[in-house]
Image 1 (cartoon, helix red, strand yellow):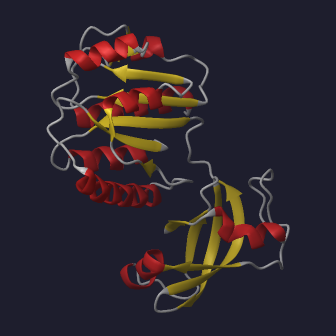
Image 2 (spheres, helix red, strand yellow; image 1 turned 45 degrees about the vertical axis):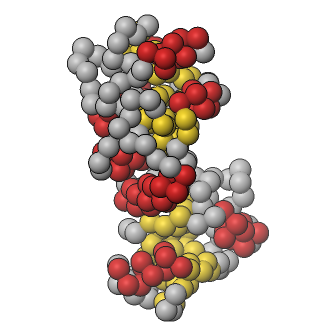
Length: 264
C-alpha cells in the first residue's frame, strides 16, 4: 500500500475525537468518528499523476511519531487529495533505538546508494561528513542542492520499505563537528580499518542503547590528523571483521549487525 509522511499536527482532529492519544499507540479510533486529511503539493501530485490512484483506493499515512493511519481516498483534485482515516496503529517497523549514520562523502552515486540502503536498514538520521581524504568537496551552494536530493532519496526509501518515520538527512558538516555530534549518543564509535581497539562484536553491549552514532570514513580512509583527533576525543574505534569493506558497504554491514542484535 502506498505510504506518505505528514506532520503529526495533521491528525490533531483525529486525536481530539478520541481516536488516539499520544499514550495510546495502536488503538483504532471509535466507529462513526470520521476524520479527513488533506494531502497537498508534491505528494498529492504523486498520488494522482504518477500512481494514478482513484477514489476509494487505500493508502497509509504516517505522522512522524510512529503512528500509521490506514486511509481511503475521498476526493482527488488538481493539486490536493482528500482522504478519510479508517484506523490507526503503532508502527512496528522502527529500530528499538535511534541510530545515526555519520558518512564521509563518497564520489559518484555511491552516496545515493548509501543513503537509500541505510534508510532501508533502519537509520533514523544520516549526517554527511567532509573529511580530508574524501574525493568530493562541496561548497555551500552545492551542499544545499545535494542535501535536497539526498532527503528526497531518503523519503522515497522510507515509503518503499514501510518506515514509520522519515529518516532525516542533514547538511554536510566538517569532521570535528561530526565527531562532537556523535559523542552525544549513548553509544558512539568509528569504524576503522587500521589498528582499532575492538571488533564490532566486542564493542556492542547486550542491552540496546537508547541512541547509537557511528562514523564511516571515505574511500581513502581517515587522515593521520583525523585518527589523532578521534583518539584524543575518546572515540572508540572498531574494525568490521577480517576484510576491508568499501565505504558504500560498511554502513550496511553495521546496521545489519545492529538489527540482528537488538531487533530480531
